[in-house]
Length: 279
Image (tube, rainbow, N blue to C red; front, side, top):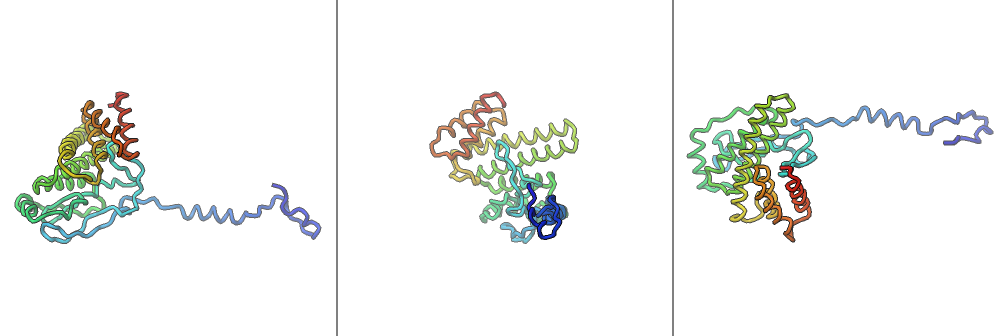
């Protein structure tokens, strides 16, 4: 850049041609950038204690939940498991009453009729022991225990097949998350293999449940439309080694005229994965 102050010499001024018009402003901006570096949110920053009233025993208690809009979604696995920055939000989806042992995924928590409450009181509450809950965040072990309690309650109250399948799917995702965490911590191959076996067990149960629910329950199912569930059944079939079944289900999604573009794109990617032999 040329001398912006050329010509002022005639006024008796000796202005350097190297003077930067915005020098001070640039220094201030740089100082602000250094002093105002955004704080990286921890898992504890992203959760809070939410109050609940148990629909079974009317006990008031608090359960940790993820703050709405705080956790940033960064990606999703092929079976739609979400991945958030700085937190595994899946750990906080099961709500457990510390008094009577009633537990459920968040979306189903308040939907309990009197006959179901009676079954829970008789088969769970009578022997339930309150787990300690003095942790600032839920570990994977804590989250898995809470989700297993949710699954048990769903069986005891004779809940919908889709609810059972969805809870099994969440448990599979939690075992995957625990495996990833332990891998970073240098866990042994034996420990990781055991977690993979647990994940596979719950994936198989989720597949069985969704496949069964598809023909007898109304949509949306667990917040998913018909074609998303079809895709899910296909992907769960693939992950559990049922390759030909996976191909049949994914073909149904691809030929469906009213399936949305997002799920068709995922179905096409899954079809390519199956064709390439990446099973």
